Length: 612
Ligand code: ARG
Image (cartoon, rainbow, N blue to C red; front, side, top):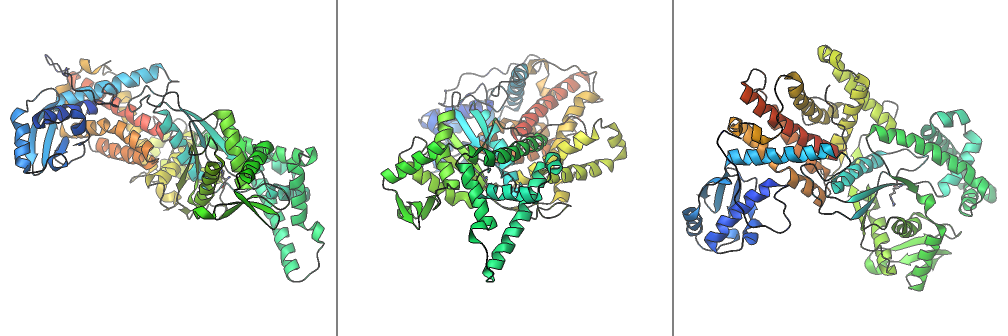
């Protein structure tokens, strides 16, 4: 606190749904609402909704025509006449149709820093709790969210779509946790269907036990490609008029094996379950590199036959079905959603049947309040059909399943070729980072664990590239660009965090104070600091908006902006060489900035590093 000063805030009306102790800027907005409401004889709640941040030239602004018709000057005058500066606001001006309010900057700085500090201390003291840090609330306490994401297919490459689902999914989960949701992360593996019959035959022909154990994902894919090639060749011969034994084509055999699997034949299942287990072990390693984890590895194979039969029966009983060449379909033509197969002519199930039965199983096991499934846009129609069918069936899960989609990734390929394996992408990113780091020999020599560090920055680069644009948009994957230290790429965010950490490390003699009460806040009187404080003040809103629109890019944008603001302040806001009071105040500021950046990075599922 500046000597002899108090930043005590007088009571303002409580606006429903906002928590001043967690989000101080709301209290400052309420102060604006109070004075305007009194002058205009309105309710503070009504005005509060129209107190805007981000207006150029004002800390907080009110657009007069939003509330009052007639001459803005007259309405403005009513406010100007009664306004008195206090610990919230220092002045108000009229600018055209706007009332422009300025914070009492010192008091505002104090309250933001104090809140960040208080909350980050509480979070550190209780690392398991997710709703202690600045930017969190516990509004959704008691609610349970189930998120089905990543969900790759065994024996097929983990493609760009799965990568996006993994990256975005992790952030969607983290975002919900910041508001008190209990989140269960579920990986719904594509591990069922005729293709596993095909894989089984393929493995008998091309499988290699040692290769399988060494690298199951690559090897199973190799086998899958080989057997598919045979299958295609056979089809081509058939089409060319060659005679084939219809009962013994590769396709017919694969169907038989899959049928045996669905019938629970232990022999058919034994091999499949090994493939599955080995693939999961390998996936877990890769997810760990991405700092992503799952509570449950589930999958299409785990959907209970009873639930699927149940769904089929309800559809039939409710008159939702029709038949076509032995197959059973739900008729959604009335809703412009075509007809969708739920049972094939040979009696086996299909993706949709499994999602219908799966909805029941997942609800039975997790009793979620909300369920999110994340996949590429291409599956939009499938989930429309699913949700419509659940609704027509009158299921409890109807209306609880939300499909979150994303755009395409172009140009993803690795050094090894065009088929993309996640592990290869990550190792490419890591190598690219490692090269970058080596180019600064001096710094490189100081990094304790260059391998580990480059892996983390590499995965940061891949993730940030993915989340910089809105999730609905496409982007072009470019390993070279995204690992660059120059520009708005992942490494820049890590670099800013490192730099914020290094201030404290490089100034071991500066006392780290416990609270904003122990610093002279008037020292932090610099327009650059004011901008940073303002940006910190907006962080809780950024988190809420990211959650509301399911948009990780909002947090990424927030991090970039903060990194730029801090980047341009280093020269003016020095800790080394400053007086004791200055050094303490500034270090305290940097520590709070670091703590908010750290939280934001964790929401983005990044591992914030301290040295690079
Ligand atoms: N395995 C699917 C795919 O690769 C994604 C599964 C998404 N989840 C679901 N419940 N259908 O396209």
